[in-house]
Length: 185
Image (cartoon, rainbow, N blue to C red; front, side, top):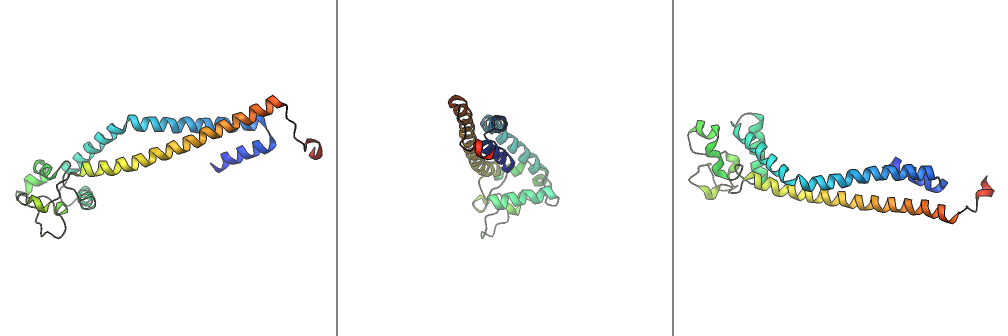
């Protein structure tokens, strides 16, 4: 961005139509990319949500309490204060739950300071919200901020392009000649 700004400043100071045209073209390409990102962000918002749920479901299915993916699941559940993909009952369909045979969910599902053992007959000691819902809330928040930033930059680029067009057209219409043209030539 520094180099692009430098091109624009130099073109303006030198009153170079070629330089201003190059600057306009660069800003136009960036503007188109920002508008495209903004539109695609809204179009694919729901797809991202479903992809996150599918990925999360596959990671939860591989849970065994020992592998690195299990550590990720435990971390999610502790940090997001959630249990399972949709809720804690999702654990009943996993291989881990069926292989342990003790009708418990991982300890990371337990609310702090409740002496929770992870047993399903004590749901008041477990997080009841699913991790997909919690992660979606946080992702949507970040996504909204990102979309606002993209929109802000696109607006600045639009006014930059408008300014370049005004400068170029004004110089052309008025036949403007700088005062210093004979002094420094």
